[in-house]
Image 1 (tube, rainbow, N blue to C red):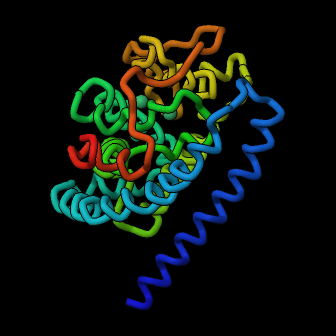
Image 2: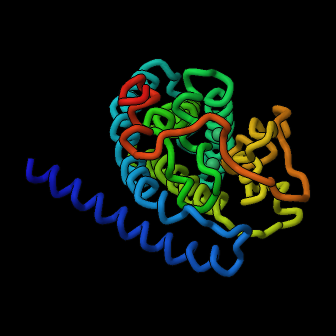
Length: 269
Ligand SMILES: [Zn+2]
Ligand SMILES: [Zn+2]
């Protein structure tokens, strides 16, 4: 018990250090290269920081047991020749294949969150703010995060790119960490346009259009590679920036209400 408590305290401390580092990088960048003046930032910051800690800890804890079972179950039914061929791939090939399949799984998870009303009830929390900046990346309902991570990571296990070995789990963790850090970048309130690079990797302009208040919101679902949106017909990246962000329906102000309302609970549910 003491051990798990100190592990938890250590995890919180590590996340606090990460948050400090991220703030040290993005706060000055957003000041110097601001796309827009942020008026309501301070009002939203406490809840966004709460979501940062919650979403860094809870979805991983919820998903660890099913992914452990999935990996063990698949290990029983996958032919040995395939397992050793996948494990024998060079690390760069597994990383490239892993990024691609998790991107496609994540794309469809995210798209379903927009197109299936019960999933949108949870996902709308991420789209509610009328401003976009680096910290918005964390603002999401844990149920939404569990679903999207499940969609992004399951193909890695099914294709045998992640195996129940320290090395294999390391790959999944690195893909998840890289995706998380990139997520902060694409939300940043910076006015950078990056030319040809915008065709290859997701950028602030690409993802800001995903937060637009107009009908083009249902585009640009990819976390890393805009090519996946091109492939499935949802790419949208004009030369200008969105005029406004957010959703029409009023959203609850407090973190507690934001967590409870999609579950049908809370005072105004
Ligand atoms: Zn979305
Ligand atoms: Zn976003």
